Image 1 (cartoon, rainbow, N blue to C red):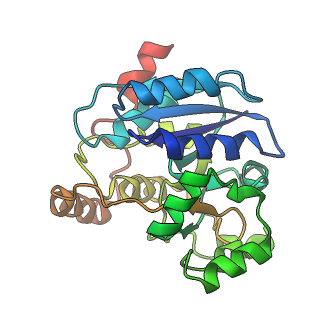
Image 2: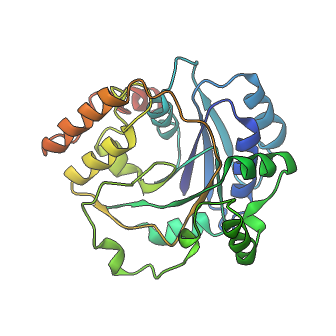
Image 3: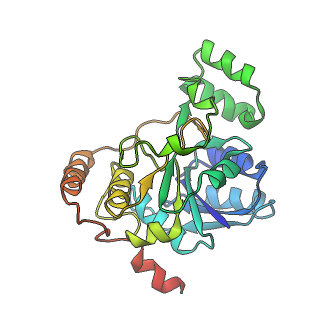
Length: 273
């Protein structure tokens, strides 16, 4: 069983397209946990009215809105999950029909798998939302056209390269691993105590997770050129805590014995046992 953790906040239109792309997967051996960082009732209404009767189980894990707390709500969602393997994506990301199946093939004991993404332009994002476009059904030629017309920022993530041993070449490379497209075994996530909630506000909580995984002997297995996501345009989050979080991250890089989050998933696991 795979648990797909979808992080969202007050954007039900984007979440709708995200979930529809998940419902179109060729591999339906997964559950969806919507990690809701304090959205208003419009998100709950959309989930309840449109997605509880889909081809895979969907659960809505929500907490109150107290600012950006993506790490916290992801920890809560994982603590409620049933899967042995976790895939994290954002609620403003759309996936192709082979996304879950490819992550399943990439899953390997002792490894985490970061994928890559294609960014949509602001205007194209609005078109996709207004017209309710199912981009996961569009052809390769469509995406070539989107690139030539500036609707997306690149095409290379759509390349499909072999899933063999070369994907382990940069086993300790933590950079550019983002939880908008990230897979790992739940036991490895729990072993490092999940996301560290001392990272307040936006910035570097995903990098910190990756660094602690590497410190604990978990290797990077490259997911680029295998399982990309399409990332809708959005305004930047409040980055007022970015510098403080960067300082925390730089300290973690130097502390090879730092493995477990100070404030992590263990506070929720006992409640769900």
